[in-house]
Image (cartoon, rainbow, N blue to C red):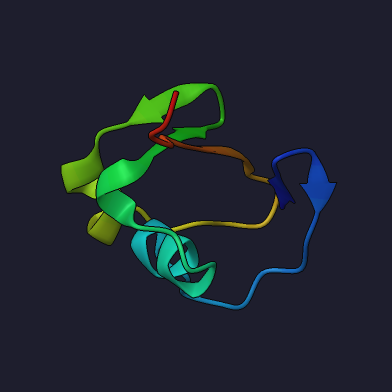
Length: 64
């Protein structure tokens, strides 16, 4: 799978929420685009990732 433009191996049965958490990101502050579709935050726990997927993760950061 491709995550933010980088190729990565994927373990079986990885849910989007778990991948986000494994990166130390707060799912409530992340926007996920999976295969060119925005995934609503409430769907992160039930969105299964598969080989060949393209994922973009964007995190909101506060500050000025």
